[in-house]
Amino acid sequence: MLNPIGLSMHELGRIMTSPPAAANQGIYLAHDLNSNHYFVLDRLNNSDLSQQPFEFETFDDAYAFSKLRERGNMDKEKKQEKKVSPTEIERFAVSRKAQQLLKDGTQTIDAMEKLVDRVSPVVDYGRVNSLLLTQASPEQGFMTKQAWIRHDKNEDLKGVDFDQLEGVKVFVPNAKQPGQPVTFDVGKMYSADEIAAKYPNVKMPAQALVSQRNLMHQSSEPERLGAVVDALRELRVPKPDWVWGRNQIHAVQTHMARHMAFASTGLTNQSFHFSASERKAMANLQPDELQTMFVKSVSLASKINRTASRKLYQMKTQQKMQQPVKTKAKER
Image 1: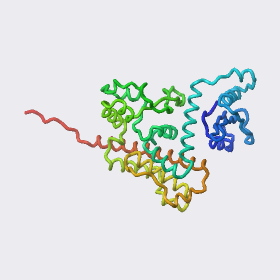
Image 2: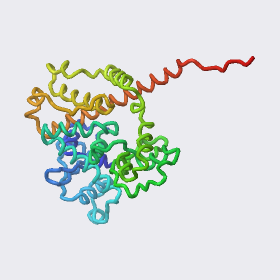
Image 3: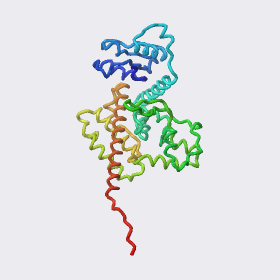
Image 4: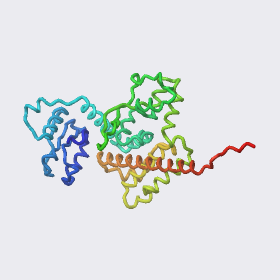
């Protein structure tokens, strides 16, 4: 199968050098942002590690070629007949946008500092979507139209015309089919800030809906801090100083991840900055290495937050169970 659309050249390189295991069997399509060319690697019909990817100047040609390779038919006439669906083109465009945002945000160490701050409020949305949502920075409180409507029990947002809002294109999960993996398509998310700007009269209800959906927002600072610290312990995420002597790059990644986790849960409002020692350790890294560092940090921060949310939910549930049941006094 074509798996997946929208790889970066760095990701394609990892596949090319990895063992020809079953997990790597497929047709891979990647986009080189520097040359604006497209590359197709066939690991479905040929597992030879020495095989080089095929290069194309346009996405349509690369996609058509990859689909023909997938069917094992290189007939030129069928290649000309093959057309790319608008859905696939949109998926690739959104994926490419995320790659471009990552590339732009990691060009320099200063740029990466700013990217950490922009991603922090939306790190819970996952690596790709968090990058896409930075386009609306500093807006917060994002949900799809369907989610806004579903959670609006009091119909406070009944007058909101989402078609009049700009929103941000992201990847949203389709309805899960029994026995099938979750698939994603392009959809839009709208922030509470954008809704409030267009419809000031629903600012409070919109913000309330966001808080209701996020247990962290409903909890006190000591509760949030306790949950995050418990998550760090469970995941064995060290403080950067503890691992600096062994692996400086890992220490920097940990610093970024911890900051994003604390910032996204409202435990710090300070801007992120690398220390002089960290800047020195990163000085000779290539752009793709900076990208890899950032991606790993976002993934770790997201994992910390998911674990912290679970810890907080468990704590709240236990507190409710321990509350004494109030009984009415018997009338005499």
